[in-house]
Length: 334
Image 1: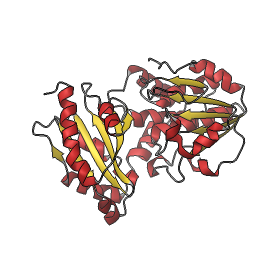
Image 2 (image 1 turned 90 degrees about the vertical axis):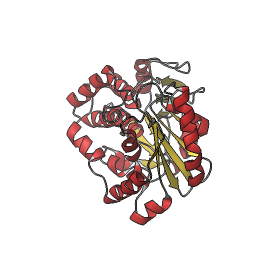
Image 3 (image 1 turned 60 degrees about the horizontal axis):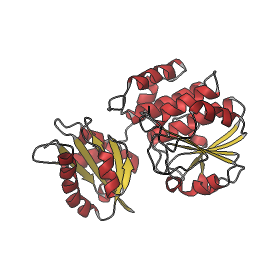
Image 4 (image 1 turned 30 degrees about the vertical axis):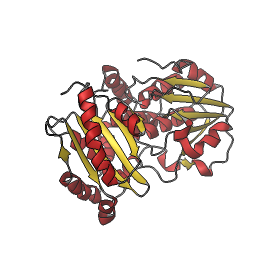
């Protein structure tokens, strides 16, 4: 693992500084995924286990996907706009900049001390003490090391949250970021009380009927490059409205597109009331999809990234093939 220049503390030293604080607010990014939620909830459980007061906040109210609501402590998370308590320490998890914590930025601003634990590289830091390692498979893996430094008696709930974080960000341990260290950490989490079968069932085997219906629409929209190196699909807002689907129902779609034989880059576009959201996935190590995401107006990791397209869904459908062609050509795949 390689920490960024903004990193100014080790996880062990961060744990020691946290032990000197009493009141914690933990927060992730807007539209939290399994890694984001799992990381902050795991740290909350560890901090409470050593007698600290800790609260997890959400950037936006009611923003937890149905498949992640089983996470221990998720039901008690507070909308950032509603939090009014004391903030001794603010811990940002899986988020590199204050722009991504929205309403929680005012909570962070009034904290006595600020921490960041993340695996997204950024040119700036957002806290007094930062540990950022872009080589980490998931923020949950960093949170796991921090949890173990906070307490030798790791709570089973913390293990469950960290396992969920690691499992989701490695694509069920199928993505390129599934390192030997990731698998060793997963074993530790299971030994500490995480139940892989139950967690997998909650996250991946509880799809709504609406999700299956919009998958049918998505499959009918798939287009590929002539050489099959990239594939693109999309869903219109009318598809969601027709079946009563929500954003979370579309989460599996990009990986379905990615699974096509020969495809090296998959793109999924989703029309929302406030714009067009895009997801990118790479298959193999040759392509860095985060470069394209940053160019369009987003970010992420080499193998998984996202963006918001400034335009209509039809404009996005027309523009992305050119971007994808350029991406695979720069990667030397043509």
